[in-house]
Amino acid sequence: MPHTADAGFKLWGETLADIFVQGAQALYSLMTDRRRLQNRQVLEVELAALDQEALLVDWLNHLLYLNDTKSFFAKQIEVLELSPQRLKARLAGEELDPQRHILKTGVKAATYHNLAISRNNGGWEARIIFDL
Image 1 (cartoon, one colour):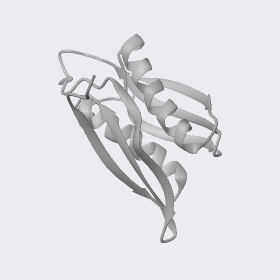
Image 2: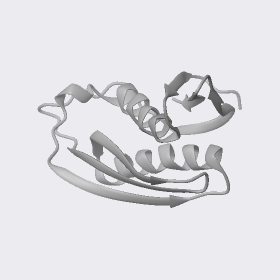
Image 3: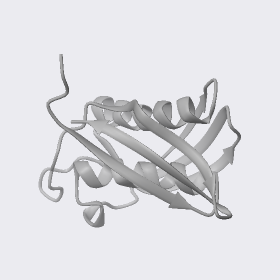
């Protein structure tokens, strides 16, 4: 079945951790207005994957899982530890409050389609596509 909708982002950063933070921010920007979020709850996330591309996709899909199961949106995203196969991060945010939060686009998943992470001119860049 062909994709009916998707959204792609190019991410840039000085570090690989910046790419993971920007990917999370891009995801949440599709779903809600992050400016309305407050730091009422803190969650820590630890993930492992085969390589940094799989780790990025797993990370973003884990954020979707937290949203699906706990209605959680992160305002602040901090990468505490990162290697090509492991990630530890801290999320500060809150559960959905329909009185204050505007829901935008539903995101089904982060995908491997055209996924790329590379070093570029002393920094990092990545391309990620979300299935809507």
